[in-house]
Length: 111
Length: 113
Image (cartoon, rainbow over all chains, first blue to last red; front, side, top):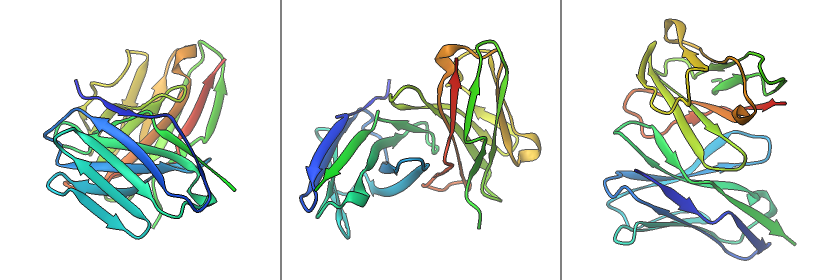
């Protein structure tokens, strides 16, 4: 079945870059998503990438997609304390918005 | 425009009791989804409504869970009777038909003691 795997925890210093990695199993996924959950808040779509792209950049965020290895990464440049959150990688299933999520990577930003 | 709202935000109940969670999707969104995150693990799909019809309920854990979406508007998720392993955060999401993005609510944290 479909499966999405992420490392559970990442700690970075403020101002450094953060790289959150994810592997997925369904090679037919048309999109891959990154969601962010801040403390006490719901899930917010951070960015997504079409499967025919290798890279997508949006301000401080860079998404890299390696379809051959089924590997997705999210790079946050100049990480700030406000970036502290749980980041979830997700792929769609069944042709709808039904999403398969990873367990989430908790990003901790320290001074 | 209001986002997806869920009620209550927190619920603590005893094992064996009944709890009903509510989700109000964004107005006009045909798709409504329920997800659950248990004990820091992955967020798992529970079910999907298109308007008032259940499109996919493959993720529902067992028959103690009952979801409804009367009139294709808000949805409820009832757990009866609740068990300890039902504890977790229940998320609701909605989207227009054919959209690539689903909008999530803030979740309901359910604790069964």
